[in-house]
Length: 309
Image 1 (cartoon, rainbow, N blue to C red):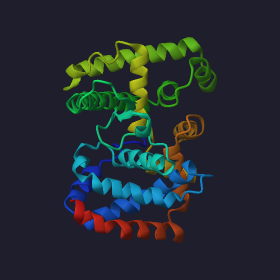
Image 2: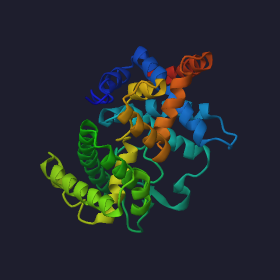
Image 3: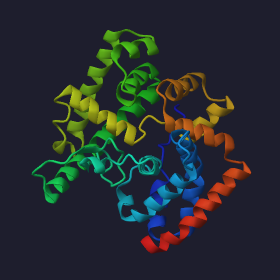
């Protein structure tokens, strides 16, 4: 039995609906649930910059409130908040690509909080309507790919097929080369290639059966393009990240040995900064400083809730 069941984020729909209706208690729950892990992530990313991680966290919750109308399309509140935070960190560090003639393309979620890698050069003859159509097409394709990827990853976890999951994670999440992957996982390069090709074939079959698959059937035709799109979707939706409760059991040393090995790999080899931030937050969530952070973020954001509902 996988410790990842039931599915992650099953309470997200309730929180989203309540927050959209202006429920301050639900918003407080959101802040209490995510502020610590967001700060831990921001502290890692802003280390050495002199910038305050708390500012990035505060801006992230305000960004969520400003986009309440888009929350209905969010598949994971955690992934959505981390995407907003990544965007805010880019703002704070002055690396916004619009200054260099780039156009935002939301690759996976279809929202305006896509990461920096969701940009492309502005086409000389591009029009607003053409970009809207392009973005809508990408959004549908992103939803389809996220659905079939999540199904495939969950199946590997249920089967405890962590060898193949590690291979795919290094291929599509971390972007490693086949030789590097073989060494890290303890297998051969032909095995890495075989796992990749069989996964692409499986994803193609799942796409063909998806209700919206007709708009996405060609996404696997070019292997390199498929790999890029899978990588973006995987990272933006935190598809292989483990549940908070699983990380808690891991931190306490009571997680099943096979699962503990995978979590170690996920955090230390694939270098998932999101799960690393969750682990750091788990160690400090009961401290007075953590409670003060939650209070500060809530009190400085709650006034915007009624304004944007």
